[in-house]
Amino acid sequence: MIYLKTNDEIELLRENNILVSQTLAEVGRHIKPGVTTKELDRIAEDFIRAHGAIPSCLGYEGYPAATCISVNEQVVHGIPSDYVIKEGDIVSVDLCTFMKGFNGDSAYTFAVGEIDDDVRRLLEVTKEALYKGTAQAKVGNRVGDISAAVQEYAESFGYGVVRELEGHGLGRKMHEAPGVPNYGARGRGPLLKEGMVICIEPMITMGNRAVVFERDGWTVRTRDRKPAAHYEFAVAIRKDGPDVLTDFGIIENALNN
Ligand code: MF3
Ligand code: CO
Image (cartoon, rainbow, N blue to C red; front, side, top):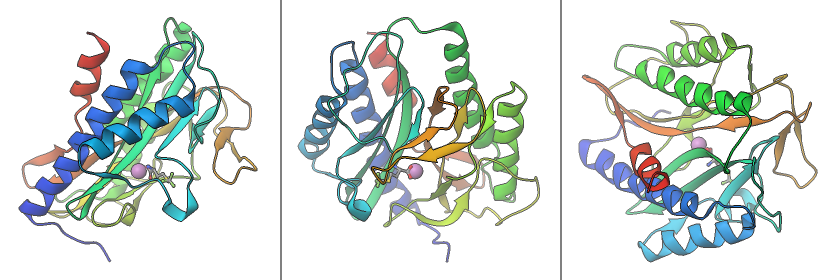
């Protein structure tokens, strides 16, 4: 069952995703050598609650924190810990809010100080893959058009596209239909209709695409322990094209100031 949202509902989803963007910016400002991922999680949780929302990752299927923070070879769903961030790390932060009956869900991968050129390129390509997929998120296209655009772009650089996890619908529930894989064929999959809201979230690896699920029950890392990046947008499907509910501009302005 794919829920189509009214314009008013899309505005509530936008409010949530702007708060997610602001929270990612707040976390990003604090990502520096010496900070622990648990401290970053606390900053995010306090910020979300101070803005009248609930961090909807906390308690989701028993998840123990407000954010997922995945460092270097961790792909997604890293649990905040006493790990101390160091220069050269890449730090993916994925977080969700809930207020006014709807969810927000977005992710961003941050570089800590100077990072290797090949890792910088991984981040740039993963973000661009998200943009390529997003451009396909319009009425009349199919989910496979998004999937193929992400896959083709990432693979053209020789990167791996993680198969085990995918994007999803977003609404009153954090995860709704349809699933939005990061690989697939153009013209296949569910038809995109006015009022659908989906999260597009490429998870791209510098080496082999294979991943391992850690024994903590959550953390997903690359099998070859090479770095992985993850960016996520919430997007409403409209007649006049993709309506991106997430605002990376808020994050990137915060990093440049
Ligand atoms: N935010 C993640 C997503 O993009 C979901 C995290 S699962 C949780 O779908 F349990 F950590 F919340
Ligand atoms: Co998501």
